[in-house]
Length: 185
Image (cartoon, one colour):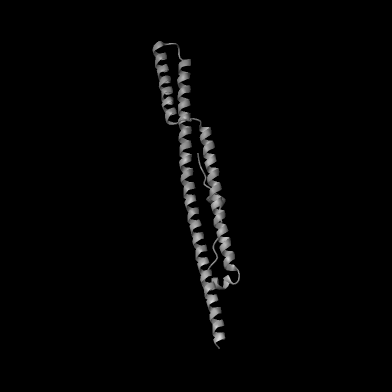
């Protein structure tokens, strides 16, 4: 009788111990998933902020270059097309000097005035950010897959059912256009 009671007690301790281990692993898995989901949300926010800020910088740079070069072209055209008149010529040259000195000031504030380089930087930042967001989504799905596999295997599935554990959801974008940030320049 004592041996039977000892065997039943031993089995009970093993079952309870296994249950505690499964429960702790389930809690850890859910916390890992929730943490990764929060990280992914933060990266989506970073992406949205980054795209908005970078596109504004590029837009302003392109507008500045356009205005600067149109102003210089108009000043040059005005000098070439008008009849030689010293007063008028001096005024036009002064306008061109003013435009060029404004350009020099802007060069100090904006060391690189090549909008194509800004576009290249924007594209590079987009590529890096998109790759990082993709890695984060993949990691979230890997965590969900590992967790779902764990709670689906015997004997863990018995404990998972006792603890009313549900499978974690995989990240699937609803629509490609919703998932990707669209930058309008």
